[in-house]
Length: 75
Picture 1 (tube, helix red, strand yellow):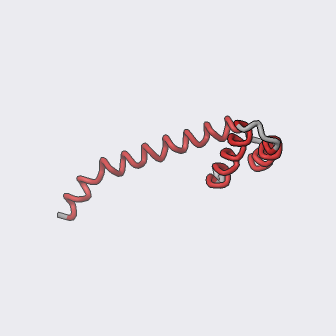
Picture 2 (picture 1 turned 45 degrees about the vertical axis):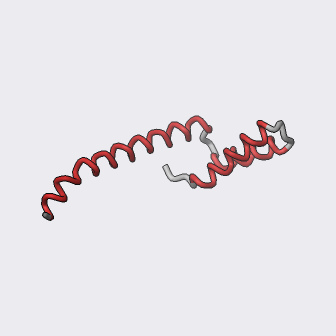
């Protein structure tokens, strides 16, 4: 999945803040978020981001686990 995570974060915070404040901008912020997401729902994007986070966490764990072998090979 390729998504501009910084833009998504800004849109989500804007929507959450305007909703919480019962602000007139809430509808505009919601529409901007929907335009950004296209066919996907917020829930679908959240699930994809969680899966990506899990994959990256696993990769990091594997890299950390392999460090002792790499250090020993250079030592």
